Image 1 (cartoon, rainbow, N blue to C red):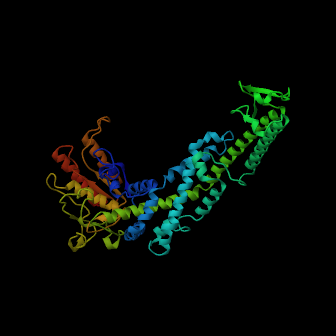
Image 2: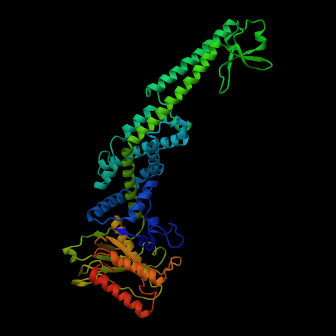
Image 3: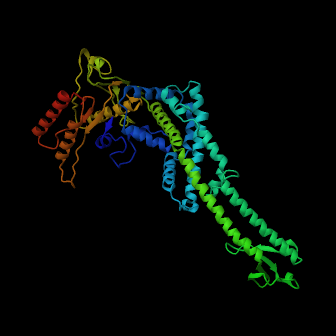
Length: 511
């Protein structure tokens, strides 16, 4: 179904007309999603309701099944609420991996601890997501509690939810310590994961041992205990041999030893051997960092290589989240019923059909003495769902009249919202409802001008009406409120009559 910006605004589907917020909108009413990406997916569903009857009935089947197991699904909903926004995290990491893939000058520190923690948050979130599907949803599908193709697609590994997620995550978990990496912001591969890194670390360890051996040799040559010769040094000039002055009296200190620093009580030396070891240590540390940088880059590449796998799993859970949201809203709001979707054909007299009995506005009826009403547009008069009896054809157009504050605009909006909800796969606010899907909803509601563009209220009104006449088809649903109000009485009546004649007789759409 096509919903233009005017329809979304007039029907208050995504934002209200008071302050532009969500409060009081159809999205606010139906959004019971547990994940952030599920909420975005539901917003997309509202902007693009289905038109295929089979697809709508599949959603209705899934929603009806989920209504029956609402209480049993509460533990699953609690787990889903704990997940981070995996959709956006995956997008950021994938974009980073693509940007850095061929950048040979990328260093480990360039990415930073923030990106590493994002990767770890994503991995831990995917692990929780896979565990939630495996423990809460897949067994219910296998037991027949969650029935229908849509739920099987979302909740069954190998059907729609991809196989191999758990194995891929286990493989990455074996490569490094996730919890340590999350805390430090650095990914250190485990032993045996990277030969280059293991070799660099082993080379650094050997040099540290060589420095320790030199310290012991110096202590022995001076006739001192090993604990009396210690290491000192900062980021540079490390491993200086620190010895107290009182211990050096009468000791054979070599003239080849270089004093690196001293205080009133101690002197610090480098032997020629220690100087060589320290120089090699700097090279060894650089080799370790280089190996760590290369391994870090490869880790992001390996993760990005399975982007399709991760994304498919996230999309499946997002789809399930939307379905359970519709089910939760359908069961929580009193008075909703499952509508019947028909195909335009012989059964409807080859005309579009919209019939509602006991319909009410989803938002306006709250806390008020709302009077339900019937609506019958198109099809054969058979006495069902508010239709007249007699076997003739029901008109496809209806003119609503009444006093101010009589509920005319409310009736128009509730009719359009009911069509949106029905084609969303959700239950609708009515005692009974049947309709053929609308390919688009056009609205011409309220009086607005465009001062900055120099357009009067009347011009805006006619431009919107012109767009309706140009885009409407026989399957469209058109809502016109007070057409012709922006000009003189007879001119306005002439415009309204001509538009109604065009839509009712030439186009034949529900108006």
